[in-house]
Image (cartoon, rainbow, N blue to C red; front, side):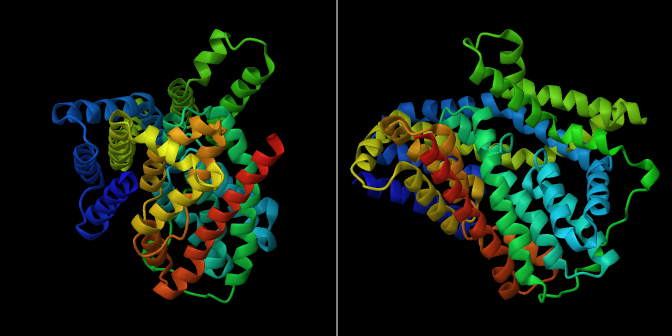
Length: 436
């Protein structure tokens, strides 16, 4: 009966979002109410449980997501992304253009949310396509593979950051493991896979042909790359101190390693380095930041809705029962987390929804089996990228921007995302084996 109830909740979520085209946040609230009733919660306690789930989730993530969006928007509009791309293109040369784009996607993708990153960075791809007369899909897949991996695996992106919160993992440790997994994953799904797509020669829509910013107006390469990587640098330094000092009670390290303060410090630096010192008024920068918030409002609502459903599972006692039930299975916990996330992703299309829904189910298993929560974050994140197809907005973004048929999109985009998912799982299992 327990698994049937959970299955009904997931099926209802799928039907509301995919079939009835219901707003995802509203769908999560409806399923949270229905789930609470089906799981036997007292009627008067369900609203409080939903409110607690929303509040607890947003309390720790709201500033991370908002400040991250602000940094990403400024990086793109200031020309920092273009500068990084131009320098790497000159360094690697035309023959290794895919490797240059992989590095660009990885570096710039860290502060950029996926949909924002896609829209802002695809014009860079097309500028290279028109300049060098290369196949668009061959040039584009490596950068988009890097964007996809950073979106699914690396904090401070919304989904992995939310998973860190829900599974009580360490953000710095998750980022460190995530980078170790991301590098081989991006290489295989990006430049290596792209070599099979050289004959897929299509003409991108002229609408998306970019207008490059004047070279003289671009920020310096050093300024651009420091701004993009500052959150990562701070996290790695704080993680080093946490792992190599007898006591974690170092006030400054605790302060800067807090995810909200980390992103705030990075945002302040970006404001100065890419804005004020380059002649932009504070009012203009704030206008850019206001626009960036619009890009992530729905992500914030989806994350909070998933938090509501998770809290209903916890307060109804179903999480503890799920832990007991999953303990009877022979599947390793990390594989189980990946599999649940992959199934929900294929059914629903949203990586964020798949990851956060899985977290609510798998969280008690992590505690009961003493699984490393940072590795579980990465396993679930990898599963959430599995087999993107016609129910995923990313699928249609790629198809329309690159002017492909559905068949061509399945042979390029869908396979790339599936490679990322399996490579991510392999990386998680390898790290887990090495740590034992």
